[in-house]
Image 1: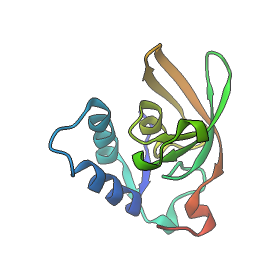
Image 2: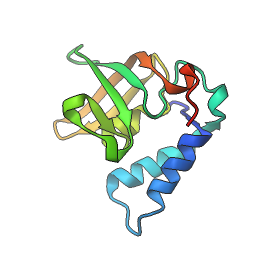
Image 3: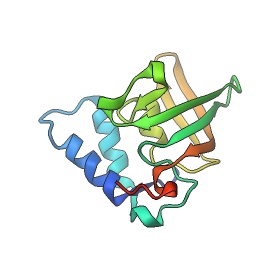
Length: 131
């Protein structure tokens, strides 16, 4: 299991999102487990190769070699037609806190997929946006 990094701000926002619930879906339980195991870093100290919230990332399917480009967003901002995936989705949860070069396993309706993080096109913290 890869070490994942989450900024202090993202960590708090994700906990706030999850703690408004009295019952957790499986996706919410998975996200809570990731948030709890993460290494928390200051937004000004997060490396540029780490996927944070509102990052735009390219990852590849290790089987098909297809490259996919998505934004990792909070649930209210998710819109698959705009390539914005929720952190509560299996892929979004798995991508959170990963680094370029990491390979992750994701359970999908079509079975388990292995995805490799290829590139981060946009990371808010790298551009001085620490919110």
